[in-house]
Image (tube, rainbow, N blue to C red; front, side):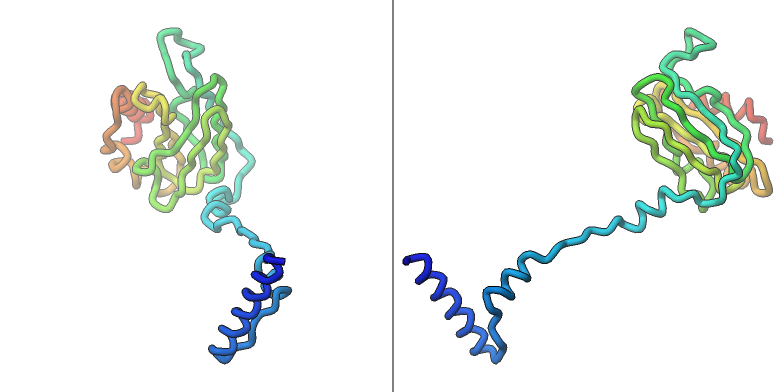
Length: 189
């Protein structure tokens, strides 16, 4: 009985407030419908766009393995193989976590203007279709300071447009020395 009386007072109050404002009051049925509206969340456009290739893929796939110990040199630790790659616009680079705890991310200051870059997850492969000529520096975030880095040189007009900016980037730990060696090996002068 008490619940019925409380409910009746609440409904009467709603009608009274609505009448004071010159509006029609909502019935309990309408209020219940409003409370059960389905909320549909849409995927943000940025997320969808970030997974779409920036250019048409050519079908040429270049695999880069991620190792804890260099299979060709037991003294080498935390390496990408190969660490220097030459490619063409539209080629797909796929980073494969051959050993656990690795991933690949582009270094934003070391990619051509207009390219989005990539951010891989630990222990998961990540692929990126190369959209523009230029140099692309990349790293394994957990092992960046240990020197786990690499470079992709995408051939074509404007290939050296971001070269000086990429060379000027400061890196932690052993990564700076490793990049110096890779740039020397790439011989882009």
